[in-house]
Image 1 (cartoon, one colour):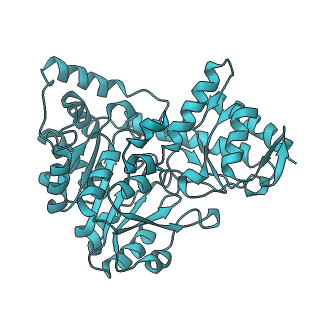
Image 2: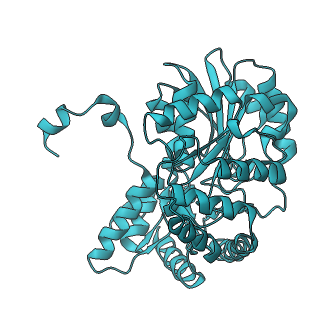
Length: 402
């Protein structure tokens, strides 16, 4: 891009960081186009196809004429299905008018930030965090305040840490459980302690991103919005991308107090309006029909997680914990900092990720994108064969560093 062109861009786009996961996936594709055999473990996308019964529901919806605009907050049929899902799975009671369907869970989070934040308002983001959180907050005029937890805490911040970060400008607490990038899952007791802190501070709201809910190996998912003390101050965000392998369908949703839901629908009405009509019909069917494909996918991910942890644990200097959800592993690789191989010195996680891409032909994402520059993220949403080969290459490349 020419200098003249850059001068005409807005300050907000010039200051916005590019999504690191998308950037790494593109670098991997570029290297593959040059003839290299690159294994990409960078994108958070299930490698499973959308279950057949959901696709059939979309086809039927098309045949039935669901090709027109929908109400901005979503088809009533889908919002009723989401209402039932919240009640069934999460112990959450939302009215239909408290639910807004969006073009992906990312849009739900953006709607919330744009509706709740004024210039200079602070948002506590539990770190490591999903790459887009901080950029969405900044775009809405907010100030990200990161509360960090390392691998020794299973990457889970404590209630005491959160309380210490609260100021008179704090407006939102934002986090995900199960977490991207760490796979960590907050227990009910951990969430209750956090809820008690927030309840003591009037005017602070919670955005709970639960998009990985169905990829949870603990046997129990806890929603902070089900805790009475913060029920009326929580927006619960979810979607269909991860649990139903529907990434390309771009369907997310949120439940929130009615005044927040109304504001989010107003915001969305000026950007995209409603999500795709036939996709919403299929999504309603997904929530209220056979969940076996979702459960089977979860068990396949559990098997891969165990295999990848076992293999990574054998690499000297690679420090791993046991994530309880999502499909990511977030190893601490600080033991490799200062070491060199093939003319390259690894000073941080960015260097380590670049080293793996060019010398092992494995694409991962640096932890710096997630607020943890001593880690990197592996997505194990790939075949067992690909994962085994990728970790063999990572092992070989890591052992060459000295």
